[in-house]
Image 1 (tube, rainbow, N blue to C red):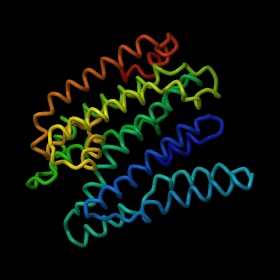
Image 2 (cartoon, rainbow, N blue to C red):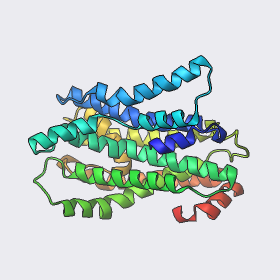
Image 3 (cartoon, one colour):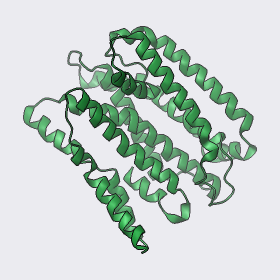
Length: 307
């Protein structure tokens, strides 16, 4: 993600808005996870989470306020460290000393995979498609590897959430569930939002236009609707579930579905699957009515393997 940030922030690409959105999707879920765990008696260090991102922001702000041009090498290094957190290393040390994976580590990993991962993957592929629309080039290896890693991370954390609080299961079992059951759902959701975001925005005709994201409002409407529906489903299926837990799980359900660790949500799987189907139908109809021949040509030439 840090390397992708550095690539998107190149002035010639005019994708500063997307770079800011990607940086936000990396940092904000970690802060929200810290607040969520703090409210439930578990602790992460906000200082360790924000140390490198804050230092990077200060370095970039210093160049901007001084009016001096920031060298590309310094900008690249600073943006790389936006995606670096010291907290996982601290948790790894603690877990190593106790020989047991702590609850904080598990929930932080789930948040990273289920919230940060899909956002990162969608934004990475979205910027790649926009770049292809402007330059006529295909997706770079960096963007492919970054988005694929994010999707695998999302599938792995979704499986981890399913087994949370249950008896110890083998690594093989968890991997099978992640790759067989979770990964197809994650990939389909990520690609659905990616294609919908691109097909419902104005086709960029120059390098100055990719940063104009007003035409992508449609994807925020669908995402907001899904989050609200997920939240309502969770609160309706379990009256004892707190609002903060319901909000957290509503975010994870966008790509992962109802977590298997809660027996009260087993009955919601079919209705949640139907919800996804209806939203995909709405997205398909919406995109089909507004997409132009140029949109379809770019997808057919460079991204046929996504469809």
